Image 1 (cartoon, rainbow, N blue to C red):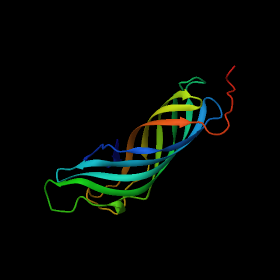
Image 2: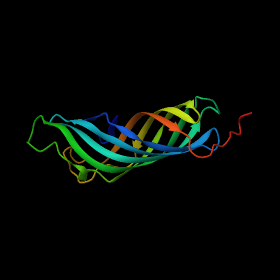
Image 3: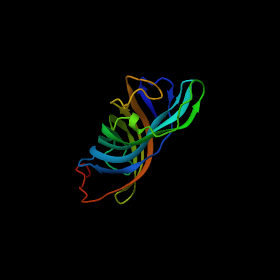
Image 4: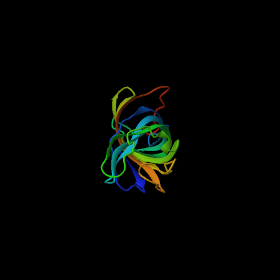
Length: 190
């Protein structure tokens, strides 16, 4: 689910798709680091009484997060994580447009030029991690991404000039992880 924060009047959350892959490294049982490469659909629904549409902005997002595992060992390894993310804009478009009142204009179109190419953000969340076999894990990941940079360019656009508009995204993903490379024994196991 994504929306904007800042000067985001008349905007509401819209659903989107998130898919990708990750690499995770943990040298100790409590601490780790991971890097993801994800395709993210962001944007918002807009309705100001004159125009109504859905804004879609697609990104290639690369978050790098530090992880703290809440258990030392076992098949259930929940963890919390936080870190920076960089999102590279792929394209943008408006769909489902309706003119409710006011002048006639083109609403449904590509508006990639209305958004900046890069978005810097902060990511934090919680992951549930179940062992499913030898170095294999089923994952449920819930995260929040707070955009730290203004996403707009080429103002004014259809929703007018806004001095500050940042991404706000809640993501829930399911995943499957498997170990590669040499396994290092835990220093906490007896």
